[in-house]
Length: 73
Image (cartoon, rainbow, N blue to C red; front, side, top):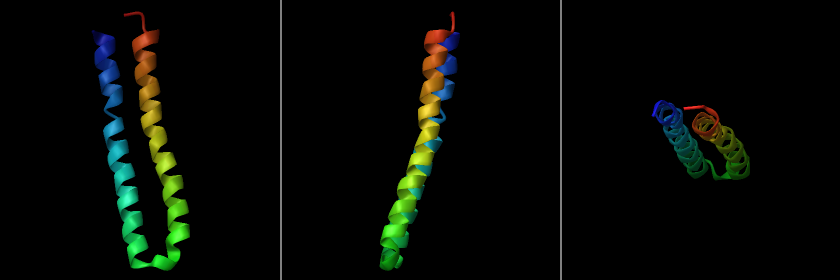
């Protein structure tokens, strides 16, 4: 039971990651609508930023899986 609670806490890191990724995408689309000439540079930066933000969720999932399957409880 303790390892399940620890895994649930580790997964809580996914919510801010999702909110951060949504904010990155929303602000990029806003920038594209304000300055269409910068579309390709903004798109490239958005893809890179989304990839970096997504790593937080992947690490949280990895920690949760390690807690569940490696811990002896």
